Length: 258
Image 1 (spheres, rainbow, N blue to C red):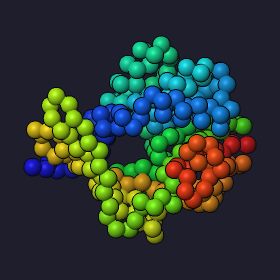
Image 2: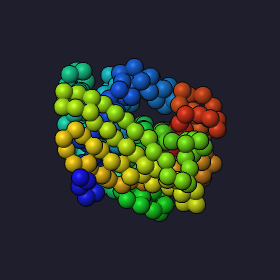
Image 3: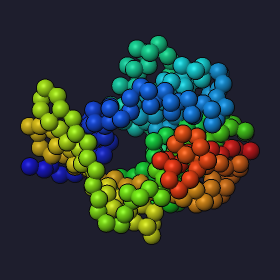
């Protein structure tokens, strides 16, 4: 039995923490926070916006380095987890519920971070380019002069992206049984949009489904968008901070507000 499509926020919030736990382990989280710190020249006292912050895995590590971190996410489930994790870690993060569409912060931050392919995400068929450009302008406005924006996204050259449907899955087992998460994806090369249907089958429960979309960018296109928003000095890196290549696992872009 499959229930009708769910709110993607609900499906991500309830299942993401379990199915991604093995992938997003402490070692990886520490490495990614280190890379962010290096690429943004992070120093104690810097004011950082993590948007969206998810369950706080990056925000709390930047706070542990002495940054003043504001984490914003629309998921109450993620924020509850993030606050509890920060308390256990003994760090202070200002977590707030909100999203790109309600962001209104003028010149407050030295660094804005958007990690794990968050920019370009949308429900259903995705977000229009006009709306995404407006989001980028709000990120620009949130930075102080000289501040840095860091965007991490999928590499559009990833060989797994195809205009035919492909699927990936994650599996876990616990005392309740075997659970499965399946993503069925199709990339539209004309719009640069990855369409995904996510099905989550937990043992003894009806399968839950949602649809979401990701607008993906080449390094050239993203640089053009950043320039149009007012940014300068745009640089693209790979997942480990190397010069961006076709075979880089991810694309990490850093740009400066003049």
